[in-house]
Image (cartoon, rainbow, N blue to C red; front, side, top):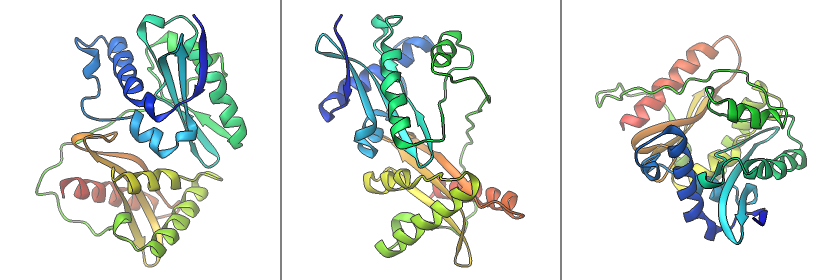
Length: 258
């Protein structure tokens, strides 16, 4: 097998999407792995957000795997990383991770991470080769949204003028920088806005941004049909952080109901 790791191209996306679903569905033991994730999407949205950060694995001229790296300022993460199941145990994932680490080094990331299956020694062993070690069990939580959800006062990034958007992005950077030095999710906010994947919910305290949540909504996003997925949420540190976070969750729920 002649394996080559190269930058992903747009023509790769249909096959990359198929392999992501097949690989995750096979690992999870689903009866039809190709239907994993339903009508939600990870390949197209992440590629379009950062085409320079997507990697393809090609064996004998055919796509067999991919990985998507993400840069949030000083913080980086990767995934979904997927490989055609027939080529598992052939070090394809390891080969995809090598240039991923080089990207993080090039970007100057001070902290990097990933999400994986906590019950899989195989996954843990792979990432330990690159000095990633298990830290937190992270629950993915959901809630049914009632149509009579109380209205909340919030702003939406998509409804701002271009000048206001620039000012808001600066405010978001200042807020996340106060949480972790250099953390910046501007690219995520802009991806949601330009690709119309949902919206970014903004809470203001006077003229100061106190919290924001980046939300995907509906099919062909990371959410899927009839779902609002809060991909990133943050509140300004301080005495009101707890109440602001509760207000942010309530606002995201109200946005989902709307």
